[in-house]
Length: 375
Image (cartoon, rainbow, N blue to C red; front, side, top):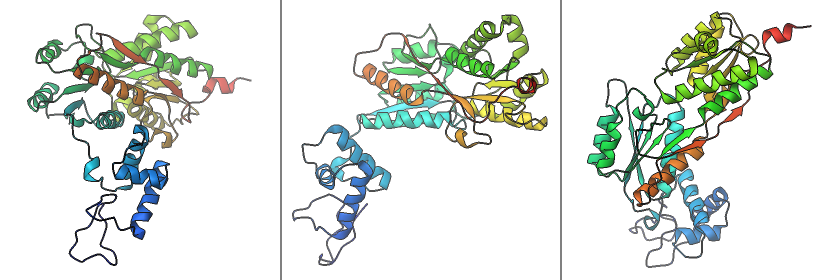
């Protein structure tokens, strides 16, 4: 943000950006002092430290310097030219869509981590009828990106041809794959523990007295879906003594990862007598709540619903959503760190880094109706 000419300044002199010095001493006007105080308060440091950072003086810890720069950005001030990072290069980030709020949340974490390391993130999003993953990859390669991070891409689809990734590796482009795993691709993978997530959800619902628990999730060809089913079936067997065939045939419903998909899947499960539904995304869970209400049921009095992701704002839905928190910050930072190691010439082994999710209990789960009616 530029400073307006103050009293005593020659009319023809151009405005000076905050913290920048010309060939004369800076004018210590009230607006500058106010801005320094605002930045210092936002960053949690002294005004003197802010001044040292803005004027490029040594003796400031890297973390403190980053806090001051972040405060500048949050408050909407323009960075002095000397503090603008020179880009180390472009890094592509390919996501399947942005309607599901978990993808923008992950993109933000990855983008911030890349920017802190001096790279410029380039977000490429697939849309229905728009560019495919292969076309977006080709576009990024043509722009000489330093590397690519794929989120929930074709690497998660067991029916897809994995040769596309070997072709990319042959072109010398480092890449990291998030959400999904394939033994056919020689690359590092970043994933949440989908099996453990289902164990957390089912254990919570069983503790509330539920025994008819359904699982609503996407098409079976996707690796995260298969892993969620494995965790769900195993936990239902261990805690309720149900057979694997019974669970898969009666209590697992495939649909789409959308609000409408969750509504359709939950409707089928509720019609089969389920008093609780575990959903593979928060968007599906919101659809499940709608399905219950269309049946004249209340959540959580009649039907409990558990989501997956802990997307932004689900704490404020009606009711606030109980969900499995996907470790987005840790996964995003790990993806960037792993990619930069690849770019730096020390590639990670062909392995999968698995992150533990967390159960967040809110208002969409409660004791089963049958449990409450017992004397």
